[in-house]
Every structure is written in C-alpha cells, then in structure tokens.
Length: 494
Image 1 (cartoon, rainbow, N blue to C red):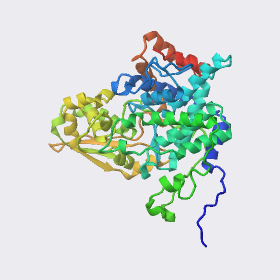
Image 2 (cartoon, rainbow, N blue to C red):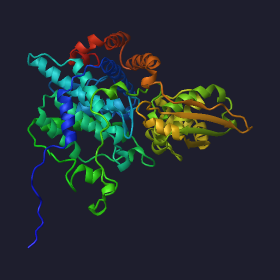
Image 3 (cartoon, rainbow, N blue to C red):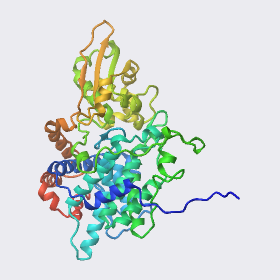
Image 4 (spheres, rainbow, N blue to C red):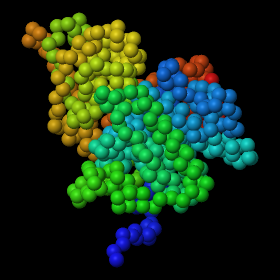
C-alpha cells in the first residue's frame, strides 16, 4: 500500500532570519557618517510628520481606537496630544511620516522609504523610556533610536538591493514590517530565539499588494500602508516576547513557504519549473551602507523617481512661463523604473494619484516654478487646467544609460531630462539632472536645505522658542545622542 506522508523533521531557522537576528543583536555601529546621517534623517522624518498634520485626510486616522482611552506611559505622537499604546502609536507616527511622500527614499531592485520604520522605533522607545523611569531605571537614550534607525534602514535596504517584490506584485511595505519587527524586538529585550520567532511571523503574514499604488487604483492607502506595516512589526515583536513559537522554515518550506507561494514567477498548479523559483539574494552583509547612502527628499514632496524631473522643470520655468500655450510637445527622458511606476495618462482621481504621476509632477513646476503638497489637492488641480494641457503634450522616452546607472552601486543615479518644443519650431535646451539634491553626491548643498526644511516644518506646529530649542538639540550630535527618549518626545507635545 502506498501512502503520502510529510517528513516531519523541524528545520533550523532559515539563514536570512538568522543573519538579521545576529545583525541586530551583535553588530556595533561605529560609523560617524551613518550616525550623522541618521540624525539628519530623524530631523527630516519628524518634520515630514509635522507638516502632514495640516491635512485633515491624514489626521482623521489618528488617535486611540476608543476615544478617551488612557494609556499608562503611552507613546506620544509628535505634534499632537495623543498618548497611545505602542502599536497604535507606531501606526500614527508611520502614517504622518509617510502621508505627504516627503520622507527619505531607497531605490534599487525594490524601492521604499526606510524612515517609515521610525513609527515603531520611536513608539517603542518612548514607551519603554517612560516605563523605565517610573521603575527607577535609566531611560533609553536617543542614541538607541539612531542605532535602531540605522539597523532598520540596513535591513530594508540591503534586502531591496537585488530582490524585487514589485515584480511579483507585492508592496515594499513588507520590508518595513520585517525591519521594524527586528529592531523593535531588540529594543524590547528579545533574545535570539524570540527575535527569530518574531521575524518568522513577519514573513508568514499575508503581505500587501501594490494595487493601491498603480493606475487605475492609486489611492490614499499608500500614505498609511507603511504605518500599518510598522505597527504590525511592533505587535509581532510583542507576541514573540510573550513566548510564541516561531515558524523556522517560513521562507524555504516547499509548497507552503514564502518563496514558493509569493516570490516565484508563477504558482500555477503548484508545479514550478526550476527557472520559475526564486529566493532572496543578498549582495553584501548588513552594516551601515544604506543609511550612509540614503536619498533625502529636500525640494519636492514627490515620488522619488520624479525628483530630478521636477528640478529640471523648475530650471525651465522662467524660460517657458509666458509661452505655455505655444508649446507643441514636452519630452521627458527618464529611466525604466520611472516609466514602470509613475508614468500615466488619463484622468487623475485624487491627490495620491497625482503625486505618483511623472507627467503631473513635471507639469506643475513647469507652469508654476515649484511643487508643494497643496499642488496635489483637488481644488488646485481643478483651478488650473493648464496642468492637464501640459500633460497631454508630454512624450516619455527611456534612456538606457539612465536605467543602467540607476542600479549601479557606485552611482545610484535617478536621472531625468526635460526639453520643451514650441509650435514655431524652436525649443529649449534639454535640462538633465542625474542626481537629485538629496543624493549622497550632493550632501554638501543638500543638508543646509534639509535643515531649513526641518525648521519650516517645526514652525507649522510650534512657537518660535520651541522651534529654536528643538532645532538646536537636533543639530548637536553628542547632546542629542545623550538625551533621554522620553525627554526628547516631551518637546513634540502640543
């Protein structure tokens, strides 16, 4: 008699999970550049969150699920009066950070915004610090937050270097969940087994589809998806610290694991050809590379593949602003990722649709000389039909060199060129910007502007004295690192 049975030999944890666990538990951060960049990233990320509080579509999501809930040692949401449990606080902080698409970016085979992980990191660190003080113990310091940010950036970014989740229809926020889970479990005191368990649950979760980022379904979920992922990371870390068993073969289990179910080219009839099967590929060990090379959005609240197009459009604005109706065509020369992700024609249904449209994000600064968050709102779009007139005249062309250098480790360019042709046969020169001002290659000119952006964003919520106090602390690396997390968060309560 023939029977079908499973060989029930429990495996060791998948190697990637062990690599992540060993990294967060054992790696010592000594890179001055990484710590300095993390400090600037902290400023920029918090500033983006404060600016988002001006938009009711964002703030309607904030606060406790049950109005009036009081949470002992609750984590604060910057720019508000909320004190929430760490899971909801992570959701809220992640939501405001990501709402305007203005925080940092990482571009590789997969893209994403590693500072989204600050939602979980800051919520957990604030709660634990208050709890420790109440128990007569020393609080966590902001150095632990900066270390956590560097590690979360590294986990998310290194996995993204050679592994495209978007190619199989998954959203990049899976990497926010994984990175937040690892770093928050560490902050909460997890041992190696608990940390591995938490990571396994992050991968076995149902993963978000990218549907809400692409035409014709683009919508505002993309503005809170990362907060949701970071919040889930905190929850899974807590579950693991309560002793929940892990799933060691979550990635590699035949038929039921992440690779076979979600990361292969096809899953038809569960009969995968060898060439259809894929596993993660890591091109380098975890260290501090990602934070050191992170891309800041300094000038424009725009999807990052369009940042250089916006910059080129601002340069062209004085030359064409009085000839907008004489334009015959506008040629945008770009890279493959921009074409695949944000090039779209047709009616744009909402603000989230517009801030992921290459043509819209180029048309606005061509016509108006700048691009700010309010330019995506329905009222502005409806009042200025010239935007859609310009969109209809745009031609999108791929430049193979831009596509190639976008992925080259020593370049990581995000190039766009814009040229305007007029009906009389004349044209502007092609304005090409290969590296946006937030790129590592332009740190010298970028950081002073990032600091100005932070001060301006602080001023949207706080009086001048508080703005000066927060800014001075954040500018001082040594003093910031030594500051207790709960004291730091005190400064952001309104």
